[in-house]
Length: 266
Image 1: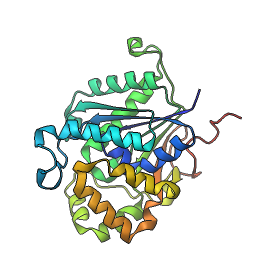
Image 2: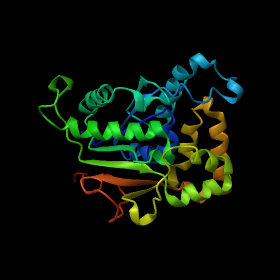
Image 3: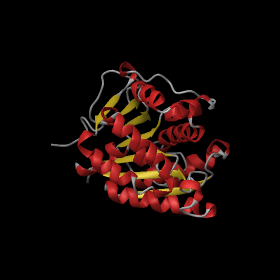
């Protein structure tokens, strides 16, 4: 049986824009990669001036874009739930956790990636997704917890995707509007300096494939333009994707370069 990697994130482009390089890298190594998205992102862009799709079709369209991005990344499956975009934190937590537990027990991943405690840059949906996912990962391994959701499953490792301090600093300098937006959020990004990271994945060899997958998210044209500008001016900061380790050994050092180190047979 192949090893499995799973992501549990909030919006249809989180997997691609955020962790796409990592997912592509492992899929190409023969790891079975699965993605769970908790919302359809219906409050996101509908294209420039809403000209790509009608507002009421944004959610279903973005779910289709995620499916195409998953195909381009080589994912084994993509699942998109329909919890409310920009309102995930207000939904009954038990409902969300239960859906995630059911999914985890079906997919049965050895390694799980979720949003970091600050949601990357303070996004409330990202923060809520990370909290719900962490609870679900723990409950999934409890044999007596809701056995009707499937046979219990213990993930061996959990990593939380975070935006490194250097990335935030340089993007803020290049794009003042991004820095201003972050200031409006209740939660500010933590300073994820190198000594606080648990893993850094080199995605330099798959950057072109990541960009190809990102381009599947056509409704997100303004974000695509922003990232294209940033990559053109600061290409070096996109060669890594950074994570903090949640368990089995929380925190930073020793810094890992492979989320599956020690888990591969042979």
